[in-house]
Length: 313
Figure 1 (spheres, helix red, strand yellow):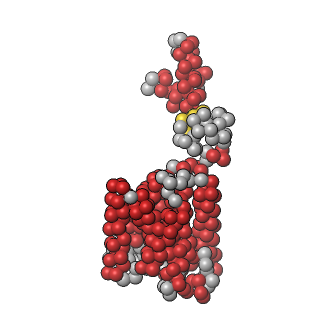
Figure 2 (figure 1 turned 90 degrees about the vertical axis):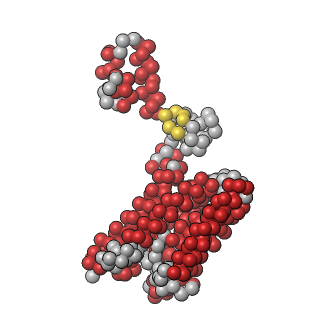
Figure 3 (figure 1 turned 45 degrees about the horizontal axis):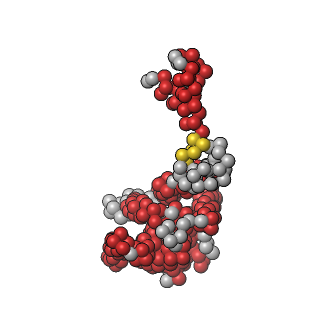
């Protein structure tokens, strides 16, 4: 590795390397490059490369773009949409693992792929499955949020996360990451609320939230029109038809949740707007932050409840 590469990668101290450079001008250039590499950031608003010490971005005018409040793992998670989708998937996978570990003896090991590695009903109930029983008999309204992060088997979570990853990229691009998360969270709540009103006893899964993304893309494609909009609308319509047929064929599918999620996604897509006609604003950021905090609080409560239950039993 050459000396310049070693300087830029921080393998050696600048003071140790300066005497080994032949020309004073080269020292200044290398030191400046190293310092600028450490202090340069992407503006949180326009994504242009700027100095972290700038009082405001000279591209878009964003005040104090290098402040910690605007550049921390939390805010970057929202700005970098692919990272935020990874966080959502990780939360779902984490809750699935917890549901298995909570009652490993009750885990389903059937050769049936639909029930292989399925958590026990006790695990799912304690961790926040929703429906008429949890809400009416135990007054657990918070399960309308927690149920979206629970899954009934390895195939269940695999297909939901695969769909989430694919659809979230489209919704992120056309609506923005803040509105994507609002739609995802609210559609799950609305989908499960509709299934509760329809009398579904016990239900789980991210399907209602994912269907909300389907509804948002469905609205966007129809509203935007043009070649791109029409093609997107036709493609997502195939998803809707597949979900409808799948729900009729496979037993145990919460069709009320799916339909409620799609309907919620369409309505929310209309109310929130998409990037081409309305840029994301402060209201969207605050609403998404509220959804994130409530979701974290609910999941923490669910896990805490499960730990308390395991200690008391």
